Image 1 (cartoon, rainbow, N blue to C red):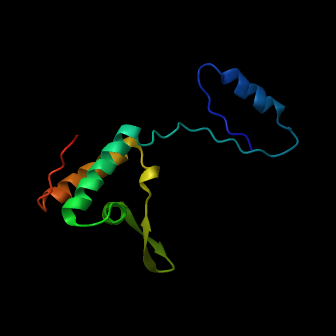
Image 2 (cartoon, helix red, strand yellow):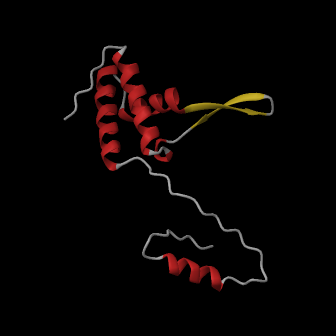
Length: 119
């Protein structure tokens, strides 16, 4: 398996690698734009918010994180005629999806009197 991240400077290297593949064999080549996963700043902001919320609501940080993930990142999939909860990981979210997730948490917690104080 070859994993290759192409940029403007290494395109010819990718073409060279493709030419090296055995033409008598079947190959699968997948080309896609990379997802922009959440940033370190978003992650830092998130854990600060989770820490403050945990203190405010009386939970441990890990519990607060789990509760928010369950509340806002759970999708229900049909499996053998049953609706089964599938919980998305925050690490799989794009920067845009992560912003939406943060906004949902802020809005929900605001309804319960919590005010996030950015440091």
